Amino acid sequence: DQQVKQNSPSLSVQEGRISILNCDYTNSMFDYFLWYKKYPAEGPTFLISISSIKDKNEDGRFTVFLNKSAKHLSLHIVPSQPGDSAVYFCAATPVGTYKYIFGTGTRLKVLA
Amino acid sequence: DAGITQSPRHKVTETGTPVTLRCHQTENHRYMYWYRQDPGHGLRLIHYSYGVKDTDKGEVSDGYSVSRSKTEDFLLTLESATSSQTSVYFCAISVGQSDQETQYFGPGTRLLVL
Image (cartoon, rainbow over the protein chains, first blue to last red):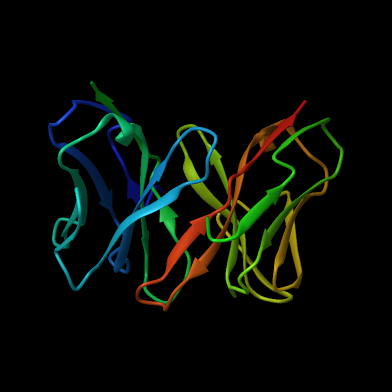
């Protein structure tokens, strides 16, 4: 039973345009969400997070949106750059458990 | 890089042999984790530790054991490796308070079981 789902295995976007990566979750106990980026042959690196008390968090070109009623979050990258090409994982956790559930990842390719 | 190292970085072994992977951190963080990453499955938690000698199972713990005899080291052991344990293994630490904590990952160990 996949509690965190990334239904798009891959996404291609033109440089300079917006990239939108989506993530759905099923467990209503999740109240803290994160996005990680992973390059080949490296460990995942933390990108941005959001608590369930917010519906938006922004950090430079990256914005995460949370829709609690739909159990859906999305990561927006604007403008997209070729260096953003990577696999993106979303993760969710109930606060205080220190245990994450990860999605299966979306491979983003930004075309120059 | 949050001061996390993993060794070895690459390992080829034969079915039935024991294998131990090491994770080392330099910053005395309490929580440490072992994940495996496989195509189509994302990152799955194998075991985690919340202190010296305090460990618990994750979602895919069968066939794996762990030990943490000191804060800085978290060992993952495959007692008798199987081909299904061919994977990339990542260690992670948790940093920050419970409502804003973040996990930081090591560089990974690529394991091939023949």
